Image (cartoon, rainbow, N blue to C red; front, top):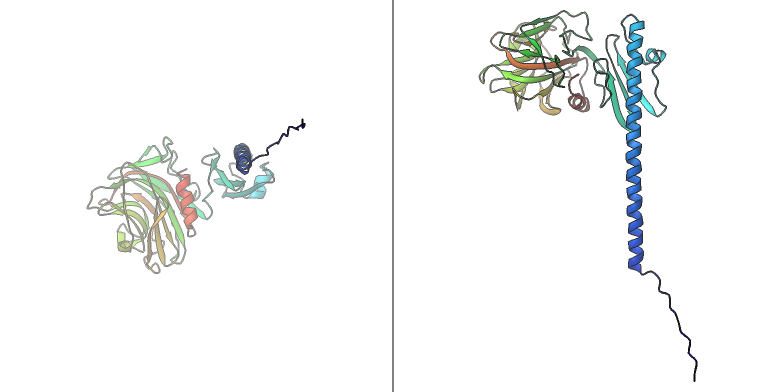
Length: 332
């Protein structure tokens, strides 16, 4: 009788099984990486905001010790005890009466300002600012502090950012005027930013949001952000209103961010961060500066009915990204 041997064959993984194992391992690794990145990003976000909050406290304390004046440059801010971790990029803007402090950590921007010390994501857009009326509790200019500001018939109301007493409400006779003038010569580039929630008094009337000029007429303005017949926003330089129509309807129930820029020949108009007007209007030939800044019923027949917030004027042409940042950040 022939003896037989039992043979035992051990089967290995099939190619399909190996692929499944590899895929499972890859999925688990991806989940681990995503979870780690989320934890890291939250930690970085918290650290960035904590450092900014501490910086705001130190800047405020230093202002008290410095006769009511904020540190006017980064060196002075550092001397006041403001510090950040080595992986943080810092930009500090100040004119003594106000400041904006911006940091970047892990490719993400954060900022605080003298008007709002709560750290937020976003960027400072105050580089080149020459006039700023935040309208938080008053119409005073926080940059051009020597400007004389007068409020007639306008009352404080809720601002674009939800802040109580953070904007001004205008009726058919309300206006705010300021002795601030910019530009002061025909060759100066400039930009104007303002938040608006309102309309002209009727669909056939003009409404002045903000303007500068020698007289109250549209054609004599140096610059004008307004609402033309049909309730359409318009952006005008040198009184050339016919080329400034934005094709966007003003609203009495929602806020719109309006920006006008002028580089010496071209006027641009932005609504809610989007470019709506670009027109070559040439050099300014109307009287410059030609008078101060006015908001609302500068001309009795052309009032603005609604709320205005956070007027800023810059001595430069804001870029598309700077306009977008202003819109994204909202009113101060």
